[in-house]
Length: 256
Ligand SMILES: [Fe+2]
Image (tube, rainbow, N blue to C red; front, top):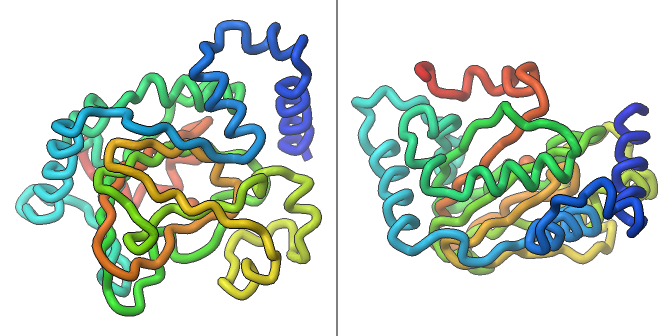
């Protein structure tokens, strides 16, 4: 209930121009665009956020970690053998944080959620086409049914409609959207049939390497199953407290 009240207050303030000026007075025009996208739709696409040389460097950092097992890397693989994930890749290589606009992203997240986001980790992932793959994230879901979650996804390879784009149902992060769904309010996983039965438009985030997608993963989303090719991505997970991050303890790297 507290989360719903908080959402109502923050979203309402954002909508009211005069109050918005007071609460978001230090927001730059660029940040304002991102916040508007997040509040209105739960998602915002920022093109060309880092240079191609940095993209290449980060991609080869992922390949090195995935291929060089001697580094004792804690790698999570899906049962289909399509998705390989390094949770907390920033613990193994500082470039994952240094080569992305981390402070800019964090600032947007803090403005959006109106709270401090000191706890985070970076997920470095590569997903490739394999017969029967279900895409990144294991199908349609919301990360939380009750509280807003802020994530940033940077593609490190060009992503087309066949190579596993992030898919999102705009506005599904809002409580009124959730209430109108014919599902239990706490439900977090959904079948393709359930999603299709909603008849909602699905945003497919095809984008270039170096683009960033900012999103509220309280909304309905998935990585689309791949028909071909591969997708490299860096996802920054932000948390409002240590306890939330602790849920990922077994997946994260052992040493800091
Ligand atoms: Fe998710």
